Image 1 (cartoon, one colour):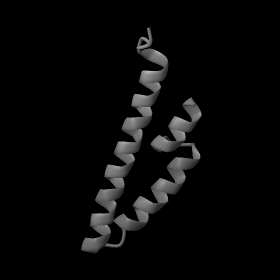
Image 2 (cartoon, helix red, strand yellow):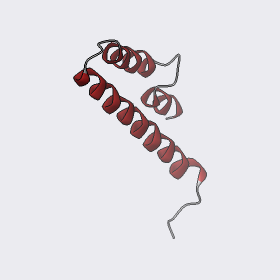
Image 3 (cartoon, helix red, strand yellow):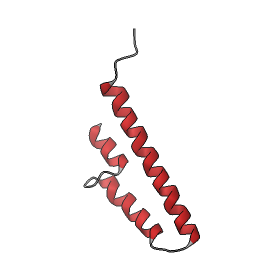
Amino acid sequence: MLTGSYTLSGIPFFSGYYSKDAILEACFVKYTNLAFFGYILGLVAVFCTAFYSARLMYLVFISPPNAN
């Protein structure tokens, strides 16, 4: 699960980093308003993915259980 979270979060040297990095780089070097908007949306998506992956790891493995 840790490897999957790293991949979804875009951590370097995992497969998710290379695909997200290529997409964001392609949007960034276009120099158009639409490409810049896509770049910003991509950054927001990467942040949200990293956030929920970190939250998943915390809730599953670190926080105390909520069951009775």
